[in-house]
Image 1 (spheres, rainbow, N blue to C red):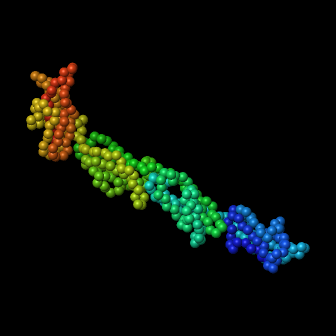
Image 2: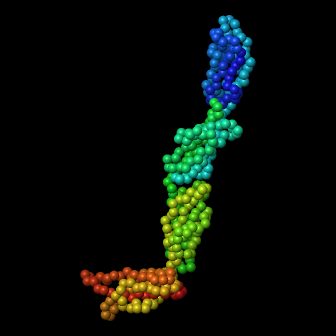
Image 3: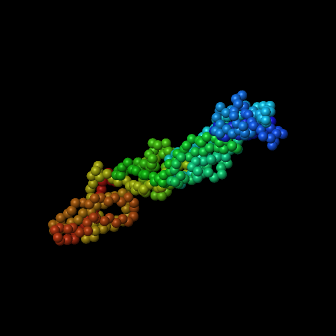
Length: 354
C-alpha cells in the first residue's frame, strides 16, 4: 500500500491537490480508508482525498491504511507534501512612461522571480491579450481603445502564480507640438526665442523624454533635448516632438514667420521722395533693384493748394528684386462725393542708416 500524490511534492498555496491510497492486491475488495497527516486522523473513507485551496497548514507527512471487515492493513509509508506561497510576477513597461499616444509601440514584460528555467505559459489581463503565450513579452501598437489596466500571471503544470502588479496605460490621440515666440517685434540685429513644447507640460516625467526637431523653411535641423532656440534669421519656423526607438513623432506645430523689423518707437525717420513718385494717380509703385532693408510709406494729396493726409504705416522690404508697395488709399471720401487723390510714395530713412 502507498500514498500516491502528484509527482511534485511542492504545491502552491490556493491550488487543489488530490492524494490517493493504493492497496496492492486489494483490487475489487470493499475497503474503507483512514488517513493520517502529521499523526492526525481525518475522517474520509474514500481512497481519494482532495484538498481544495491548500494552505501552509496542509503541508506535512501523509499516510493511509485500509480496512476490510475487521482487518486493517499496516500504515503506508509517509509521503511529504510541502505547501509554498505562490510567486507574484512583476509586470514592467518599456518605454516606462504611462502617458502614451495612439500609434506608439510599448512592450509589457512578465517577470517571475525565482522561476527562471521553468517552462511557464502566461495569462494576461485584459483577456484580449490571451493568445497562446510562451513568451513573457507582449508588444502592443496602441490605439485609444487600449487604455486600461494590464497584469499577468504564470502557469506551470497545475501551479499558478499570483496576478502581477497592475500597470495602467492612458492612450491619448496623437499630440501636436506647440510653438511660441517670446516677442513679435524684433529690432534689426536682434533675436527671438522660440519655444517648442508637447502636452503635458515639460515638468512631467513623460514629457522630459521628448526631443525637439526644428524646421526652417521645411529644412530639418538636428534633434535637441532643449525645447528652446534663439533665431536671428528670417524664415518660416516650425517644430515637432519625437521620442522612443524607432522615433515616434508628434504632429507639426503651427508655423511662425519671423522677420527682423526696425523699432520705430526708438528711432526717428526721415522721408525721401522716390523717382516719379510725385503726384501720380496710381495707387501702386514698383520698386526695382532693392539692395538692402528699407521701409516705404505713402500719403495722398488733393486740391490746390494741395491738402496732404498723414503718412501711411511703413512696409519693409528685406530682399532684393521687384516689390509692389500698395498704398492703403483707393479713394478719399468726403461727405457724399468721391475725389481721386494723387499719391506720393516715399522712402523712409532711419537715422542709423538701416
